[in-house]
Length: 306
Image (cartoon, rainbow, N blue to C red; front, side):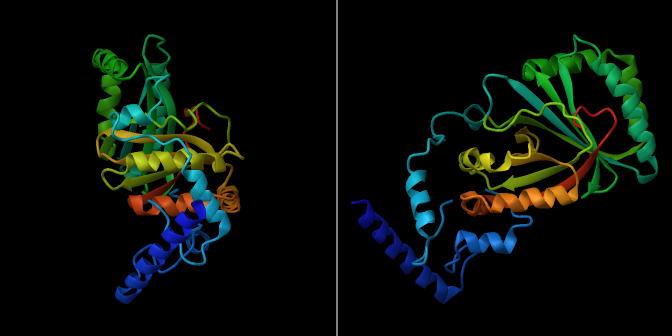
C-alpha cells in the first residue's frame, strides 16, 4: 500500500527531526521545506541526497518523491564515472586553463592571445578547437580563462602537443606570455551527457562560470539530479556547457551559462525558481557540495562564444 509506505516514512522522518531538534538543527534539517530553502538562498544557490520531509510536506513534493522512484538513474557500480556520465557519441576531451595575469600586462596579454591563437587554430590538421576565451570581470581579477576542445579525446590531445612542440611561432608565443603571468593552472574535462554541447554563438553576452567542488563519491548523484534539473534552465538558451574534471583537481564541476547582461541573469535565474521541481533539485544537491565559486566573464574578440 503506497499510502502506508508514505505515512511510515513520514513518521520516521518526524521522529528523526525531533531528535535533531534537541541537539540543534543540522544544516538541512529543522523541518525546512524545499520552498522555504528556495526563498532563503535563491540568488546564488543553484546546486540541484534525499529531502527530509516533515509533517507539513506538500502533496506536490510527495508526488514528486513517487515520480523519482521511476526516473532512470545511473548505477555507480557498473562502470567508471567518466564512462557513465560523459557523451560517448562525441568522444571529446576539453581543457580549461586559468591564467593569472600581472595587472599591468593584461591588455598586452589579450593582444598577444588575439594575434597568435587564431593562427594556430587555422591549421585544419590540428585536432583542437577554441571553445571560448574570456577575461574575468567579477570574481578573481586580472585573470584569463580559456577552454579548448580536443576532437578525438586523449589521442587528439597528444597529437596537438606534439605538433605544438615543433611550432616555432607557438614556442615564441609561450615565451612572451610567460613574462606576463603570475601563475597558471589547467584541468582536463569531460562534458556531461545531458548538457548542451558548447557551440559558437553571437554576442554580445556575458558568461558565468560556476565551479562546484563536490564531496568525493558524489559525482554520480550530482549527475542523476542535474539530468532532471537542466530542463528548467533552457528557456533563454542560457545553458552553454557542463563539465567534470578528469585530470587536475578532482570532483570539480563547471557549469557555463550565457546571459545578455547581469539584469537578464537575475531574471532568468529567478524564473527557474517559479518552475515546479527546481527547488527540489536544488535541495537534493546542496549536501553534495564542499564549496562553490562564480565568475562573470567577458569574451575576448577571438572567442567563438561571444
